[in-house]
Amino acid sequence: MRARLARQDSSGLVFLLVGGITATGLLLRLPSFNDSLFGDELSTYYIVTGRSLGGVIHLLQGNSVDLNPPLYFALAWATEKLGGSAQSLRVVSLLAGTATIPLTYLLGLWTVGRRAALVGSALVALSPFLIFYSTEARAYALLLFLVLLSTLALLRALRTGRLCWWVAYAAFSCGAIYTHYTALFLLVAQFVWAFSTHAEDRRALLAANVAAAVGYLPWVPTLLDQAGSPGTKAIGILRGFNLDVVRADLGHWSIGHPFIALGSLPGHIAIALAAAGLAASLLAIMRGARRAERSRVLPWLSTGAGLVVVLALAAPVGTGLYSLIGNVVWEPRNLITSWPGLALAGGALVTSGTGLLRVTAVGLVVGAFAIGGAKMLDKSSQRPDYDAAANFIERVGVSGDPVVEGSIVTPGPLTPLDVALANVGPSPEDHPVLRLGYPSRIASLNAPPYTRLPVAPAQAVAAQAAKLARGRSLFVVGLGSAQAPSLVGVLAFMQALPARFHPVETRTFPGLVPISVYVLSDSHGSNGHERRHA
Image (cartoon, rainbow, N blue to C red; front, side):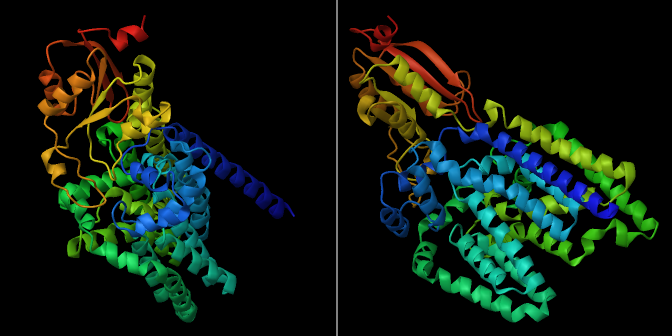
């Protein structure tokens, strides 16, 4: 009786711990959830906004904007009806990314034990990498959610043999491939693990995977068409693939942020703490090995822990090998499916010791990730604040004041400022937008899903802007602070303007890349900026 009550008390405490960890993860994600749309999110916005579901699927099959399967876009199309804001496009990612936290605990409980599962779920909750992708209007958080469900369903099917779990395994696997093509690396790895360790279930395992493949057949013609698209070479052109890239990307994936230097996020102190925690756990393992206690100190050598190791390696190994023999697909976000395996392997490692060494190892590693997670609350760790820039222009300017934007590479025909201005103004025509062209390397990328904008010389844009801004304010928007602008073209543009334009105000809005808005006044005639501030 006492043992049963103790187990109930323990289960209740664990339930509260997992709930608290999940709530913490959600709170860390909410600030980034409100960010401006940026990067590939603009492709999602362009695809799902103002279209029917059939139009969304047709556009994806057209091989001109986005080279990805349709499931996430169909769900984003549905949630976009909630309000058409950036947040409505991110609802799927936020829900899926948050649900990944307790699902990681459940996977750990079934494979490496309760202690490791709790640590692993905490790392998922605190990871800057997962916080970012749990708040991005793209498919990666949904992909992670579905491959986790696929793995959990597979474990239940192998354990119980029940048909419903085999059906669930097939459905989640099919859904994962309908979400992103890189799901295949992890699905193949978990299939190989199951096939090699559960010979008695091979027939059911094969049948479930055949069913998933049959369910995917309708999309195969589009997959084959996209495989021949020039856009499949985009990652290789923009990033390349070499040992330096791999080393840096593994750091960003494992402990950092996808776009911020590791020295800044999580920072050198956090990295040192994580390294010390791993060193403490290795010391505990060596002490246990000397005492011939390997079966107790190294529980991760079990079959379930073997699966965790397979999951942790699947995406990095699969993505790396494919990048060597085919088009380059190596980048941190394409490794996301292996993150729960990485977290649980780390959890198993730091909890493998006993006593003070175990407590020290867990505290150091979780503390390192907590530092990174806390830094994600800072505005400088979030996406460039184009919404704030657009609101400033709308508040300060008057209808018709032109805006010059230092263009950045974006998928599809829209830029972040396009979307931000459309969301704050009565109509997109309120402020005519002129764009400085891409840098030469980006301009040469004439391949879907990236749209090549005409390379407009600063002098030509300056002449057009001066004509539109006669007697008005002229707004210039560029990346970087006023003291260190990231786009040289912005400075060249302002130098090419007629002498009658002079600076009135500059506002810089923080983000992982700051956004600066320069307000220039035309000294000839009445000026809108002065009128608005009268």
